[in-house]
Image (cartoon, rainbow over all chains, first blue to last red; front, side, top):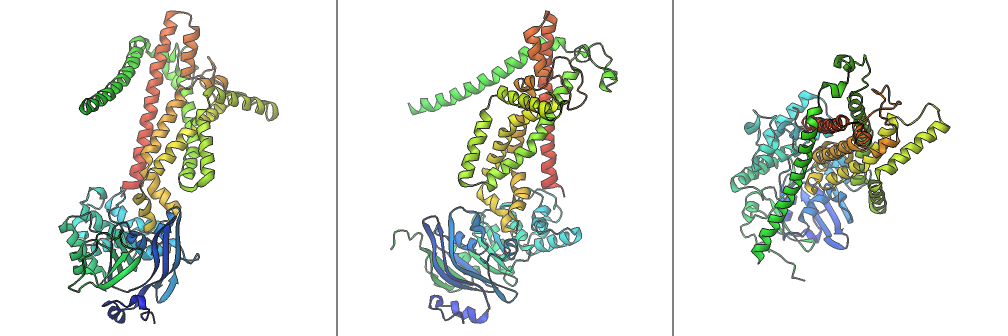
Length: 269
Length: 293
């Protein structure tokens, strides 16, 4: 059993394990940029179809942690990793750092949305269909069907259906971010990593995205970095705090007494 | 005091820009005043009927037509030799080459950029002589040798501009496609190159200008004063910069000298035309790659 591990003995955390199957297993994960350690011997479990929020002071490796789950950090020079990350795809755990595990396949199954919306300078339609093109799909009808489905799932279809050939960069910030989510969803990922997806948007646009994330829970496992306390209360099932390269606490997101998130912990030993 | 400094730096920058702009206007204006009067059908086609000349039915002996065609062919040939190689080398330098190898390569490309064109011309000439002696006696300095030497001359510009515009792309653009399952090569071709096309295009334009104006290289590798329209890439040819050089050093009467100014204007127009073509291609390419529904 995974949950006997004393590191995971957080309030409200184990309860959720009982309900859901584990999706991601992380054991002894350490990460460093050159001589600078970022993650230090992390062990954690994330269960399927939940939203886990990761909080903690800025510049302390939250984004890096997300990138260890889709190996996106690998283009960074002098970065090193130790430990094991296993993800369950179709009822079997795969070690994603196994050299034989195909990287493009991993990235299709583990989607990622960034802090600043990053649509490519192409039409809306081409943006959303882009991952299919990368995957080598040629059937035009199939692609247009998938684009429509993805845009609907990302709550964007109604707003853009009449102007799919317009430049994606002409959309508003919130629409761009939903476009990026649609683009990640078109590959039907099993895990979606979100790096502060609402922090560059105004409150209204952020609320739409929060609602969208809740609707995606039935389909994906979501891991989200966030800075907004009230956002966590609204949508997160589990909140984990990352500090000094470790998860120092975890608690259920709907608890009333989420402790204030420390702004910075650099001074502490 | 600080305010004065702020103002004077702004003023100085403004003056510098104006001096540069003024110089460009002076040069172009001087050329136009001196040369515009000489530009007519006779300057380009001589005594030959333009229709006969354009369809290559008759040779033009007393006009600039062969030189215009020669320069055009030269630029198109050498740029199309240089672009694929420069492009590929730039991509290699920016995306694949790392560490000590990258430093060594950078050093050599800088040295290549610093080689005077007359030395490149001498090298092209030597290659032509070598091939003539040991390979086939039918090879002598010709359009092809000139184009290859010029390609060699502009390669460093193309490599550098491609490399720099790729390297300057911010990290979040680089991560977009890999996060969606792109391989490294897909990322380069679908995202990174389209995003750096503007920078790459400026390298191409720089190369076009360099190929069109260079006299030292072609002087040693096949250009002659009278050759007519080049019959093939293996024949001698005429070129506008060489004509201008030739006229200005050995003109027989005042009218002949003035035709040199006319040739200079035509050279500028050809450069402008080639720039426009480069921009047009870049624009169409961007549309084709990024926006076509």
